[in-house]
Image (cartoon, rainbow, N blue to C red; front, top):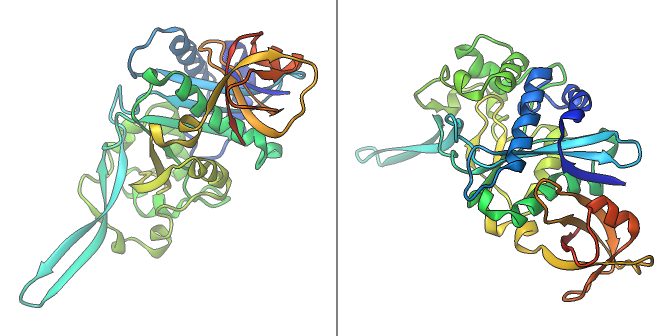
Length: 338
């Protein structure tokens, strides 16, 4: 059985493997032992703390095979983007100009460096084993974060965002970066993303142009990248879009990838998840497949399960499910249909 749980320090060697396999542009998963070690410690501390409002906490989850103990994926929640330093994006909006004499009014799209999205909760670090792409376990890895937010709402902001990796070629070239960022930061796209993961986005962002960049002045290949999703990032985009997230006028300042946004209360897995109490049993007349989690903090667990859920009644779970979720008779449980 695949179980989603909080990361622990002994996961470090396997987390390094996941980092090596992850898509360029997933800067929150750097292939660096020291950075990953610190990330794990930060997450462990966040799970241990008593929190009344969102702050700098990060909650890192791994997807583990309970039999082999092999990690098959990871994902993360940052409680507050931009809490410790500005969270930079590019705002893509029209600049309007008009001439009464010529009776002309014209709007030109322009990209402006900003940190408007600071203060939102950020979903990041999504990576799953290629063999599990487009399966229920991709849904688990992404959406179990949302169930966690539902269970611990005071820890998170009223709005949630996620930056989706933008287009780059198989050989690691980003037309958007080559046309814009590379002129201000003389580094290849892959190296810029690597430094962003190892250090921070802020020190690179501060080298970017401080004045608007008119989109029509960029090469067509770069214009085509604005809001474009990397093929390997499409599933992460699709899952959140089904949750009610929408694109807005903000894109990533390195590769032009889209930013998804939703009010926290409008997210499907938060607004529509149901709660029940556990009833251990040996026989389940399954009528549907669900994402299922406990409402714990440090011992948070989530799985995919075939269940017979009836609103207002105890939920029957077999022995394996109870063990995976660390629950017993009468324990509260949260679920949502796949």
